[in-house]
Image (cartoon, rainbow, N blue to C red; front, side, top):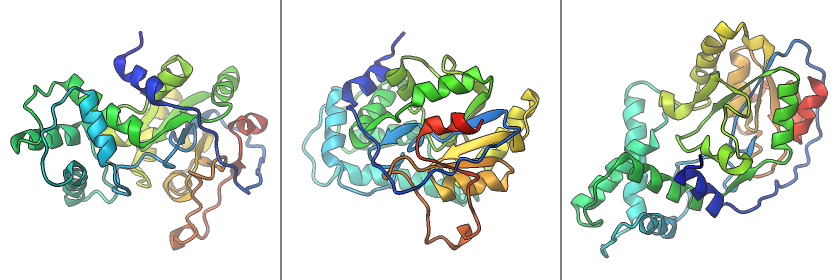
Length: 294
């Protein structure tokens, strides 16, 4: 059954095409691969901003106002920008995790939105409203669909079907939030279970409160897939970012493929000296190319 949040993605999403890159595919056969694990934003899903990002990069006041109004919240006129408080709340949550020793902190966006909305109500910038879990999630998605346009990468469904037919385990390791999996149901009409992604092989940054390029996400994956009889060396990890995806996956023993099919999201990170000797095993310019090497 379609949820209201899935419908929000359908209503607010428009067709996107990947922007071509100048990369040439590198398609070496990889024997012994028994599982394929993907990043999401910029790899399986086109992101208009290139990636999921909670960073302050541009003025999003209009989108925030639209999101709050779409949730039927009353907005008294107040000085200043609401986005300033939202961005500050995100930073405070990140700093709290850094204080706990986490180098690459991630937030739980529902906690951020609840705190932001409570603060706005306390200062009279929002009319008092009961902040149910459903309302907080609605506002989070109303905002996300307005600031980060998304659409499935070409040949996504065919690629997943081909991997399932090869009886390969499918998984996800991604910087993500609670709403990230909703995109698959919105665009493909199937949830992750129906698409064949093993529950044990899904790792999301928001659940760990830690993001890529931390190796912890890949270490957690290795522990979770061990009962399935899988080792990292038997897993191909596919992502669009040399630093966030390829580097930590290789450090943890995974085979790697850099997805270079969309200029928006392709990240070689040539200015990062730590990556001088990091090279992916494969370079893909179309998701379907995975089927040629497995």
